[in-house]
Image (cartoon, rainbow, N blue to C red; front, side, top):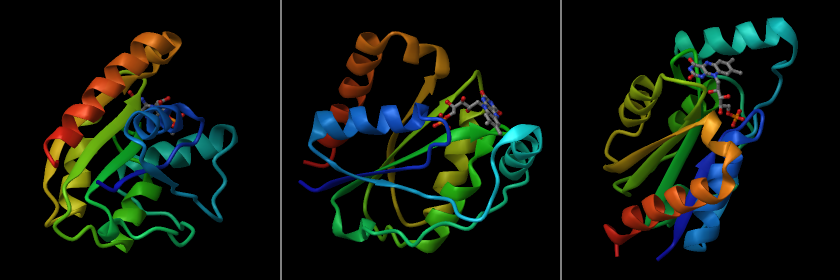
Length: 162
Ligand SMILES: Cc1cc2nc3c(=O)[nH]c(=O)nc-3n(C[C@H](O)[C@H](O)[C@H](O)COP(=O)(O)O)c2cc1C
C-alpha cells in the first residue's frame, strides 16, 4: 500500500508527528512550504493567527507528489486561530485527492481541532476521512508515549484501507 503524509509545520511540532506516522508505516512525506509571507515576530504571529481564523490561503510551493497516486493520504496542520493553517488550505485547494481516503491530524496548544478538521473535510470533498488525531503540544515532551499513541493511530487508519 502506498501512503503519503502531507503536512505544514512552522515550528516543528506537526513535522515530528508527521515523521512518526511515516516511520511507522513506511510512508512517503510531503512538507507544504509557504512562500512570500513573514511568519516571525509579533506581527507575523498575529497575521498567522488571523489567517487561520479568517480562513485565508497563502502562497505555497508547487507540491512535488500527487496525492492521487497514493492509497491513503494523511493530512496534518498546526491549529492557528482555532482553525486550519493557511498553507494547508492552499494545498487542499490546489491538489486533487480524488476518492482517496485520508486521515487527519493536527497539533495545538490547547484547542481548535474541531474547526481544523472540519475545514479539511470541506476542502477535500470527495475524499473520505477515516479518522482524526489531535496532539497537544504538551504531549511532545514525552516522546515515547507520543510515539506509541501516534503509531497505534496510524496503524488503525492503515488497517481500514488494506
Ligand atoms: C499563529 C498561531 C496561532 C495559534 N493558534 C492556536 C489555537 O487557536 N489553538 C491552539 O490550541 N493552539 C494554537 N497555536 C499553537 C500551535 O497550534 C501549536 O504550537 C502547534 O503545535 C504548532 O505546530 P508547528 O510546530 O508544527 O508549527 C497557535 C500557534 C501560532 C503560531
